[in-house]
Image 1 (cartoon, rainbow over the protein chains, first blue to last red):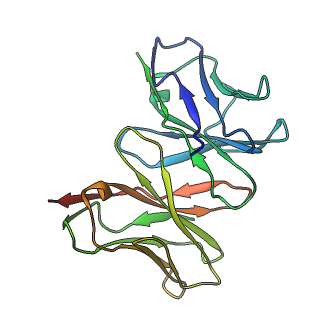
Image 2: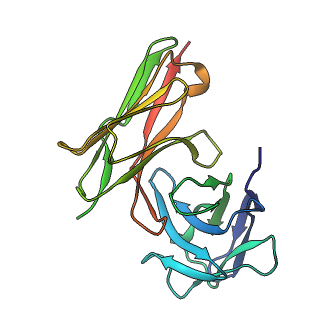
Length: 113
Length: 111
């Protein structure tokens, strides 16, 4: 069964540093997403991406965040200057079309120290 | 404001029994709902979905019920197995594929 692959599985970074979280969506999917989950809390929407541009973003997704699809397979989330409160699990997801039925990756646990 | 939430934080169920997980939503205009399962260390996994023009939908060992009158959603798992131990989230599709998740409900299956 096709999977969404995320790397690394765990990233530790110092406050103020830049991090890039990487995702390989399912190959024939057209819609890409980032969600995050702070420990013990619910999963929160960050951003959706379609046709090489952001289609929607939440209030969490401020100027510190950016997304990119640098080639035909990768989808990245960059946090320019990490803060302690950015510590969370970050999930990438992809879907074939509209409807909400999309596949999540296993996540990257980001720890900001 | 709009919200999607779960009634019970933890459900302990004997293996073989049926499980019922409940979810309330507040936006009466919501028209699409999804249940996800999240096992430890993994991402949310799609279980079943339902549109607002339906009140029941069945999958393999799972049934989702939608009561639009009271804005209530439930997930029933038949003959619960140890592999069903996980956190279950209901989610509302808020348009443009933006999902709003509830807080999650831990299901613990007792062998």
